[in-house]
Length: 345
Image 1 (cartoon, rainbow, N blue to C red):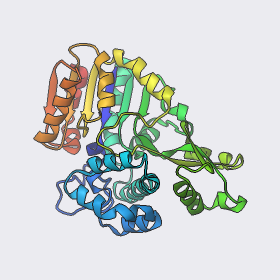
Image 2: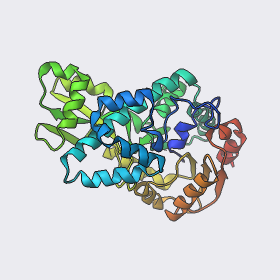
Image 3: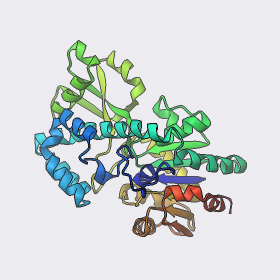
Image 4: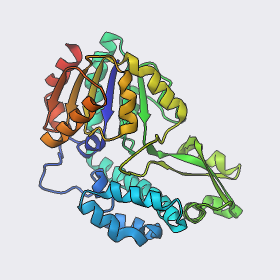
């Protein structure tokens, strides 16, 4: 079994014709964590819409510039345990991130037109998988739907229900930090006409933090496609998106997805890591059940990123043969003989 782990760097470098090293900055390129609150026209529009974010915007941007956004959000999460407005601000941040990623996805799609590195990777992997009668687990910490789009385009997979992500024997997709396409089932006290008013729903959920009038069911996930049926029952969806804090200690996905992943880990024989820095300790701890002397290929944008990933995996107990590439996702696919050698050897 092959396990592919995708981090933010994989989405950031997801179109080989426009690699991140190009001189022109792409305003719709999927952002890294420290770019989530940049001063962009659409981002500012969303910040105005979710104005609770504006109350902490100077700190969000300052800490992003210092590469310390996750530590700052962690502090806010701790403060929110006793500070009502803090909880509202974090809920607004979730809605903002959902909107920002959706906006970038839409604009980025108009650039790549479906010709993503995710699709090219799937093309090479599927040739090996079909020939070897193997199975593939894809683990992503990204909120976007680039993997779903590649699986849908190349293999005709559908993702209407949560079970669609993990039911197939050939490919399973684990989105451990949630998705822009997912939500937590939420009960709100709304006027009937407000159930068709997205902004009213969003504001009610933000204002309703720690209120008896708004109940979020953390273990009940649904895809956005279920939203209309939920409205008939007086239910709505709040974002199922993990806030990017420094010490992540839980998964933002259905429990049966986590159990399916844990069940498959002992059968993994190869790991391909792209754009992930191995900072999610709660996931790294699960890797201790992997077979010994496993083969691992780490693809990162530079030497520091790759070293951080390898060091993190070794610290988690993942030992064996490591192959390293410090030139990014696009370069990796442009020289696909490296991937073929890793898969077939």
